[in-house]
View 1 (cartoon, each protein chain N blue to C red):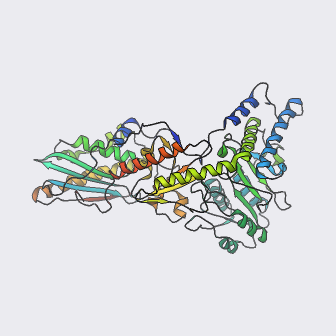
View 2: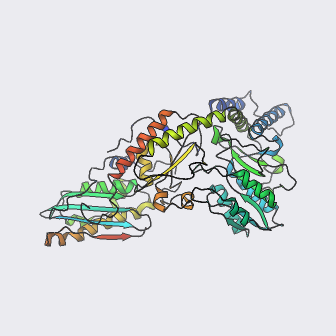
View 3: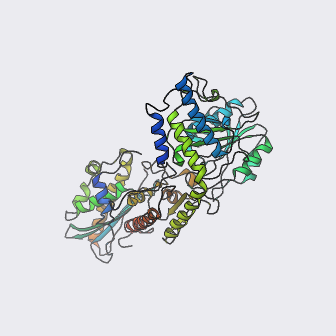
Length: 141
Length: 398
């Protein structure tokens, strides 16, 4: 690999993972989900704190490459404050461009998309009961 | 948060290539100048003869380093070409006697890919696995040699782990069984004693740029023995005993010679320094939870330290280590995330192999460079551990 594989946006978000961490499970309207790649061992874990259908706080944990970490950080920062429906509409396509993600890594970002979709699926369950809920997806990439 | 712009670059990737020694660079520039010896050394005129003399002087300097006769050395473009010529050249020359060859899966790609190509041409290759330290058991080699075995190829110092194979014992085994022995010494020549007056090696590959010489120039040692012959892979001239045709790159050969002369004078002193630096680096890293040293700790070249770490992804670790320049366990294949085949052959699982970082240092490495590397590695691990999920995390806050 000779050319610089990481643009400024990747470097900035990788170095400043402001949304990395966990949310307290005791809070009633907290949901979590994850997706993983069985080939790479990469994993994205997302947690959201809801307040009246609004994504009040999002946190993540990632085992993966710099592009995946940066993409997850950007996604959490963009989704915070939006309605839960935004999770259903989430797509990694704009992130591919923003972070200049090589085509060979597209599967890794789709793992993030899977995690966000799994988070969306987890929300109705959480709203119905008091227990935090979880969902998981596996992606071979 | 990690400050990825902090500090000056620290180069700890000497196993990939080394900075050119200023004395080497000066000799190359002098040779390339109008008043230097730019003529074709094959030309039969005054200027050509002057170039020829420079080439032969460099050959003598290299022969002094390796303690061999200058006539046993031929110049190539580097260790990759030397490996190809030695392995394929010997296999083809001896094909009428047998088509069985032996090597290890932990060899450099220049060797493994050449053997793989020979397999596709109908040769049979036995791939001997190392033990968990990366070492070859000579008993395994002895058992693998057959009536039709023609060549064994085992490297001296492994380029990823620094593990040193006992090439004396391996060579003795090959001699007893009448099999040619090729050794890729790209990582050891100029850094460790390689005494061909006593080593039972028939073919040995080396390159200048691994010991502060220029890139693009290497050599192949071909023992002066009746049964040690090669079939050339290229055709087009009579240079280098008709084994490696083409106009000789005089300026690079001059630089190679100077690098060899410097290495002859100081590799013992350099070795002691490298040992001190290696110990300093490991002392600084070994307390980090989950860290693991790869390869033999006793039979290892001190200019290389390879470590893996639990629950850290290698490519992210590489980026977080900037501006420290090191090599990752994902080798040249960060895009696919493929982990090091060498470390997997030592029994590491994919994830640990993928987290591997190779620190390699040399003549111009300072203690402060090692201290910076320790500091950056610790900070990078701390940064990434704050991001990675707990192993069993399935629920929020787990």
